[in-house]
Length: 259
Ligand SMILES: Nc1ncnc2c1ncn2[C@@H]1O[C@H](COP(=O)(O)OP(=O)(O)OP(=O)(O)O)[C@@H](O)[C@H]1O
Ligand SMILES: [Mg+2]
Image 1 (cartoon, rainbow, N blue to C red):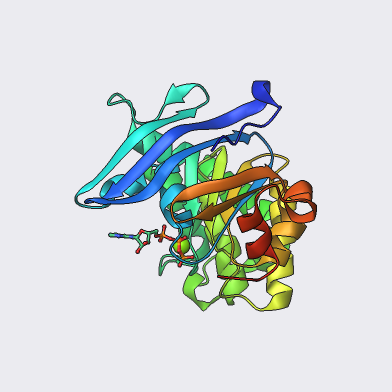
Image 2: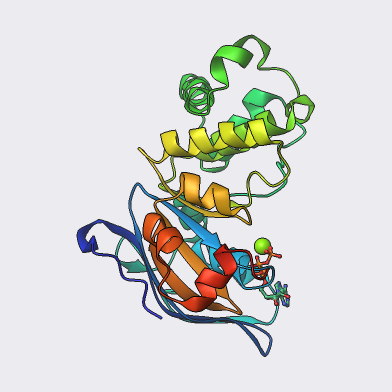
């Protein structure tokens, strides 16, 4: 199923005929999808359809599963990420992941932010302090927390922890942010706040998010991809997928008939 968009010059990730196997189980089936820079893409579909699996192929976290195998191609800015010469550490700096449950380290706010840059070799204290400030500013936490940078990150409220996890990614200066159900453990107000943050962040980053929440996909994303049993059934502008789905299975899902 082709997921071509009409914005060829601006494609940051180009997924072609992607198959992924957990042992002999084919969890992704010939997925094709172009992801346009500075947009938000929502992956939707019932539980077990392969949303997280697809997301994890984008930074090759999918490699970590014993007995797994991938076929096909993902071009990140024109280069195949499955090429043996790919520097995985660099790839995961460029394409970072935020998880469903906020997972800050049991360190201070500042040390959470400095962690990634330090891993990547940054030793300059001024640069590290600047990264703390700019990353916390980017997620709207700076004004509120600038006098408490020694506070333990695990003591923050859940949505602040999720913001901090996003700030931690931003500190290593990525281009793509992957978010696997980033709001599913948050209350409705915190969810709207994170959605607003996502809209702000897309000016600078490209975001691929997984959500079970159809309203959220409709509110926040520019493109939506509907998956079913490992296939990308339909991928297009969110406005058209929600108002005029081409495939009956998409229509059934978004109108709540299954999942
Ligand atoms: N480590 C694994 N080993 C074997 N099979 C797996 C593994 N992880 C996922 N699967 C299977 O692959 C399929 C896709 O799983 P995946 O987690 O990608 O779905 P999902 O769409 O993210 O579901 P959910 O909405 O519940 O998070 C499912 O059938 C799942 O059981
Ligand atoms: Mg999942």
